[in-house]
Amino acid sequence: MRSKKSSPPKQLGLSFDVPGLIAGVDEAGRGPLAGPVVAAAVILDDLKRIRGLNDSKVLTPAVRDRLYDEIRAKALCCSIAEATVEEIDQLNILQATLLAMKRAVEGLRLKPAKVLVDGNQLPRLRMHAEAVIGGDASVKCISAASILAKVHRDRLCLQLHELHPQYGFHEHKGYSTPAHLAALKQHGACAIHRRSFAPVREALSIVL
Image 1 (cartoon, one colour):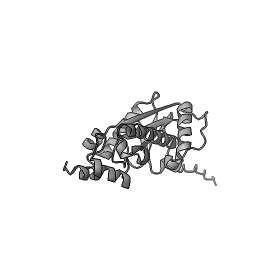
Image 2 (spheres, rainbow, N blue to C red; image 1 turned 60 degrees about the vertical axis):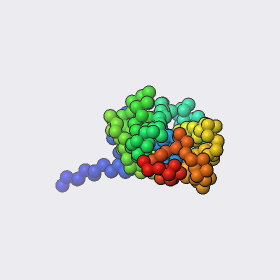
Image 3 (cartoon, rainbow, N blue to C red; image 1 turned 180 degrees about the horizontal axis):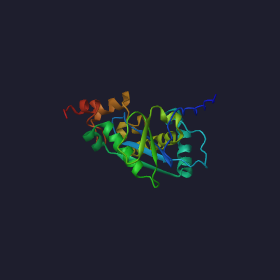
Image 4 (cartoon, rainbow, N blue to C red; image 1 turned 90 degrees about the vertical axis):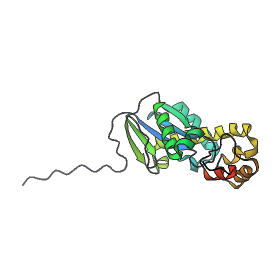
């Protein structure tokens, strides 16, 4: 009696079935009332380990800043891109986010064979891509991308504060905090506010 050959174990988790470089992609700034949405793409170097990579939201600002510099120094390549306030208002925030992600991937010096994107939506890309829910906490290259995007946008908000100090962008980073809503009510909206977002529309008392 011939023995049956045992079948190989099934691969669990992500399907890394495409040979070649893998890029992680994530965004920062979908929720704020002002400023661009930022996306980053990162291809890590397996020979240069970076300790402490995680979802940027669970890291302290100091740790994010340190990892930002380390990622930029050790990654094979990385790219940061934006979609403007005008594009957000014209396209909607989801489509503008996907556009920023597409720009980030296209800005990579090396072409990845596969792209892993945090969340459940994918930008239109020329290579194989996979959406990974919770990827910013579970996939290192996506974690790295989340850190680059978050730090870049936070630093951008510090610059916006210099231009528009009455809104307090250095503190709330454009999010809908009580202080930001109060500033909108008092001063109205400025050029970098997203007119398609309801609190900004209400502050302007207009219908778009």
